Image (cartoon, rainbow over all chains, first blue to last red; front, side, top):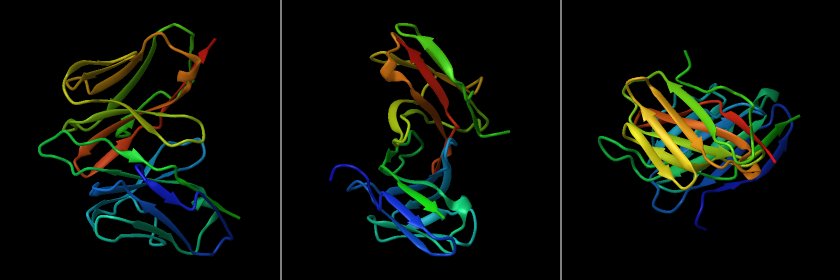
Length: 118
Length: 110
């Protein structure tokens, strides 16, 4: 497809279970981002990949969160031992590589995964 | 101080009026600035990007950037009810991260 694809679109899980969220970026986009958006809130940066390298993991809320990326394609965000406060929409975005010195290319977002922890 | 600040609103304007949305940012080295629109329950979509001081126009939208004042704005001319959404300002303080404001909710009444 032409856009960023995320799956599943909705996920309901019980507290304490692990979940895996998937993102398929636009072909050729080397940069990939994960954001979290709680209900009525702004976008919270989680992690950034350049290729399969994650130079900035500062946004991951706790060690229950991890992410990986295969080459310059699919990325998976894993949340272990989910808590109710993890309930949110998880958005993935991709862009072409930033050029130096600037500007950087804009992000293209997927439709998100709505995670509900009961 | 938040990296990117926006008034949460709602900003209410009548149809046909000009809507003015404002954003300030804290990191002076930021070079790229974006406005995204987000409809309720949907993902953000890019409206405008701006990199140089001054104005940039695209249809009914004008982005304005003032790096000295660390201020970026979005003007929407001839506002339509379909423009009702949350508008997110995004700034990159370094080339690896794009930081979003919490957004301003715009309501355009017929």
